[in-house]
Every structure is written in C-alpha cells, then in structure tokens.
Amino acid sequence: MNSIKSYHKIGLISVIFTVFLLIFSGCQSATHKNQGVIHLTLWQGLNPPPNREVFNELVARFNQTHKDIQVDSIFAGQLDQQLPKILTSVVANSPPDILSFSPQLTGQLVDLDAVVPLEDWLNQLPVKSELYPNVLEESELNGHLWSIPLCTSNIGIFYRPKLFEQAGITELPKTWEDLKEVAKKLTIDRNGDGKPEQYGMLIPFGKGEWTVFTWFPFLLSSNGTIVENNRPNLINPGAIAATQFWQDFLTEGSGRLSIPERGYEEGDFIEGRVAMQITGPWTYIMKSNVDYGVFPVPMNQRPATVTGNGSLFLMKTNPEREKAALTFLEYILSEQFQTEWSIRTGFLPVNIKSANSPLYQEFLKQKPVMKVFVDQIPVAGGRPTIAGYSRLSDSLGRAIEASMLGKPVEKSLQEAQERLELIWEKQ
Image 1 (cartoon, one colour):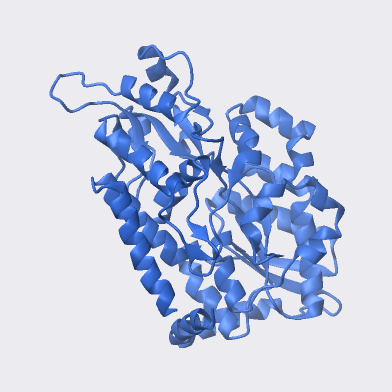
Image 2 (cartoon, one colour; image 1 turned 90 degrees about the vertical axis):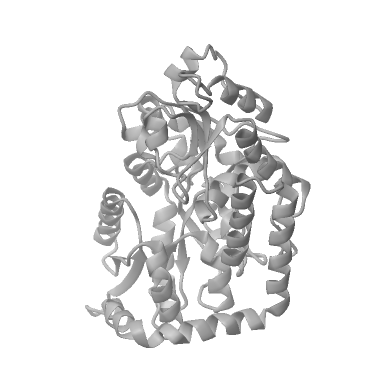
C-alpha cells in the first residue's frame, strides 16, 4: 500500500507547478471574509447546468439560515478535468473544505490521507435511520465511512412500447432468458438483406467506465465480484456469466453495439434502431417526444442493479472548519433538501422519509417511470472504491470490449486478470 501512495505522489508532484497558482487563488475564498463567519469552499462538477443551478440555489438557502457558516459552491469543471486539480490541492495542503465527486475516488483520497472519516459523526445523528442503508456502501472502505451521498440513482432498461406491441410482446421480461427471447422478437430484417433495421438491445461498446457501469447490474445479479480481499478477481462465475450474457446478444444477432465509448447516447433508441437500452433516469429519452417505458434490470440469480451515486467528501483542513462543514453535510441528508433536490433534478432521494413524502409521491404520479428506479434502490449495489479502481476498471473494460468483438469470454477475463496481477505485484 505504501508503494501505491508513493506512485500517486510522484505523479501528483509533476503537475503541482502547472496548477498550483490556480488552486491557491481558488482557495482564497475559503478564508474568513467576515469576523465570526466561516466561509467554506465546495468544489463540484454538477451537470447538466440546470442541475447545478438547483444545487446552488439550495446552497444559498442553507447560507440564509446559517449566518455563521457560508458555503461557496464552485464549479471546478468536468470530473475528469477536476482530478489533477483535486490531487494537486491535496499535496499542496490547500484542498477545498468539501468535495463533490464520484465515490470511486475514495481509495485514492484515503491513501493520500486527505479525507475525514464520517461514521462516528453520522451514527450520532437521527437522520442516519432515515437513509437507505445500501446507498452508503459505496462510501465505505476498510471499516470507515468516507463520504455521504448527495444523491443516488441506478440503472434500468428503457424500452419502446410501440415496438413491443408491434412484435406481439405483452409481458415485460423479468429474467435473463425472458430478455433474450424478447430481444429476438424485436430484431427485424424488413428488407431481407440479412442486416436488421431494428435490433432488440443496444449493447454498450468500449473499454470506458460507462461500459463497466452498465455491465455491473448483470455481475451483481449473478452474485459476482471483481474484488476479493482488496485484489482483482475477474475469473469468477458471476463475471463470466455477465460478460457471456452480453456477448450472447451479439452472437445470436439480437444486439447492436453502440458507437465506441458512446453507450449512453440515445440516438439508436429514439430513431427506432434498437428497442431497448440500458441507462438511467438522467437520460435525454425522458425529455424526448418518443414513446418509452422502463422496467427493472431482469434477474439471473437475484434482482440487482448498480448505484450511480454522487458523494460529498469532508476534506482535512482544521477542526473548526470541519465542524462547520459537517453542519452543511447534515443539511444535505435532510428530508427537505433531498425532496426538493430529487424532484427538480431527477436524481433519487437517499432519504427514505423524502421518498415517502407527499411531495415526492405526487412527483412519482406525474412521472411514473421514476418508481421503477426508486423501487430498485434496496437491491442496488456499488462499484469498488479501492485505490486501484481506475486500473481495475480499465482492464475489465478492455476484457468486456474484447469479448464483444468475439474473443472467448473466459480468455478475455483471464488475460485481464493476469495483467492486473502483474500491476498489483509491482505496487
């Protein structure tokens, strides 16, 4: 583990001088602007812009009711653009007070001793009992809670009801075998040239995180894992089954590969080139004029989906600032914040009282497809938060990509496992 830490620090020092002035100037807003008032800096990369505006409005509401604490919400760029700035700020001892990022950064921040564990604080709060227990899983590592969820979401299957009706499909698929059969019925070669104009399922193609993210529900449904004892484990029945399942759509001719690294784009679905797509409630499909519905991810051994959490980290600064930041984090978890934030952005509430509130229940009546995602929260699992997750995800993504191009699944995963073991041994 020490070698991992050294590896990160060597890489970080190389970029300190290029962005240090930016970090230093950006953190000046964290100083005490008025006597008795603590000004906290929060870095976030919330998108799309309307969601960012909602967040900033809710932050302003906190500031209005907490005259002794003022939170400055700063858009620090897209998440991938933020990473060098974040890590450099840690090495330069000038981090933001609060960081909004994906929980997959947890291991790296913990290795750098940059974040404050939160379990003791949260365990003393009444709001702890109001949270869905599994939304905290992605924030946990080595027996500690390292962040709180700003919001949650998960993956479902979007489908075109008109295309289902035209194919004579009257029941939504509930199992993997059901999904395969439905996909076959929805694959149509209208002109008989051997190339279907309509496919049953869009299969995310590429080695990036979107591919891994959308593959994860199938891994979890097969009781699979990719980490065991903090080490990669890609050769297990669940991982093999999930990858083989995706490959089967292609070998059986009922699946269409997405544009490389663009498995989230909705064009094929909206234009009717595919009848089903794996995605979440943030999708543009919900704002389009196309007919659509959503059903839960069909199960193999158990119902499952994957969480898409946004997390808030309490960065190490000093006791006074950390205490003030905890007051803001408690506000984020509250029923009031979670209800308004979820209704106005389409994310799911992490607070059970919020999800059951009259306001949110009325929202579900207006957008009934959201109930599919809310109902899946209890069966949603997270991706690992270990320090080497980015390397693990990259190797896994390459194995999935190779399998979608026709390489035998077990061979693809075995080669990825061997690459990872070499990396882990050298760390």
